[in-house]
Length: 149
Image 1 (cartoon, rainbow, N blue to C red):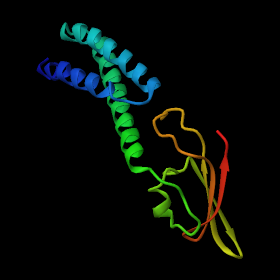
Image 2 (image 1 turned 180 degrees about the horizontal axis):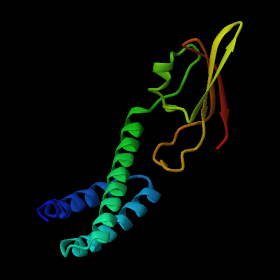
Image 3 (image 1 turned 45 degrees about the vertical axis):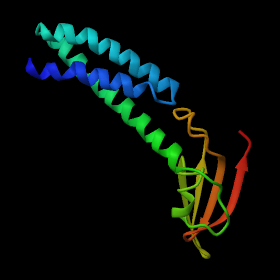
């Protein structure tokens, strides 16, 4: 059970990290998993196999939540500024539009085209990116469509 001795400090670190998250839904789920993990840890110390399995599941949920919050925080810092026609895909990814929700690719006589579609990300309210679509011909931005949120 020595491996279980590393769990309380990990839970404390996760609790501190999750407090800085800008996604309330993720925070709530992580906090519930942290509370459950504390209770399961007590039973796991006594050798309860079901508690060990549940604890492992909650620890994975907590890890995933903290990782998602860190990804959101990095995107909020990285993704700023507006797009302009003629930008490359790499340049667009550094603007407020950042990563698209979905990409639709088309092959035509005029060449390869991509439409990057952006929808509101409910998981990441701190990432206030535009909603709409961007169209590329080759690697260059050729069309911008903004939708009101």
